[in-house]
Length: 139
Ligand SMILES: [Zn+2]
Image (cartoon, rainbow, N blue to C red; front, side, top):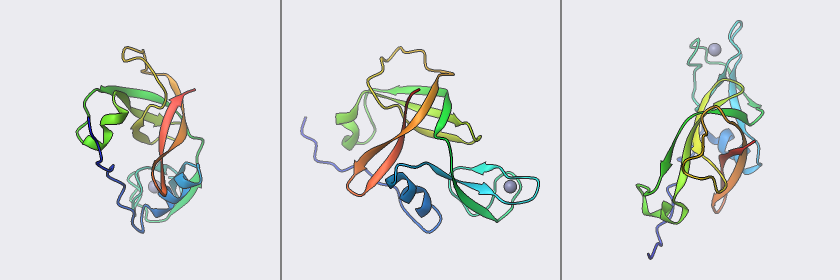
């Protein structure tokens, strides 16, 4: 099948720019709340902590490790630019630092693989010129 569609890219803005810049350095960085008694990590990027409402967030490098909470297997993507990648697993990963992150599983993993609860680590995939995105691989 002919496919010349380009993948939709993240809408980078002042709030999420540090996240995507870190991806290009192959580093997973999340926000962390600086409010006394909170200190929780925050993902996706935003202006206030979703746990305490504090507005003082700093960017910190995180481990890139997590566990698969759930997943699905994509045979026919919704956007034609992803047709060449299919089939692939889409994951919900609970990061060691707490937040839940949705992403893709890197590598050739069978459809019926028992993935829930499996350990993963982040890898960075060059999904477009000038932008890497975080995927996960089995640890
Ligand atoms: Zn907080």
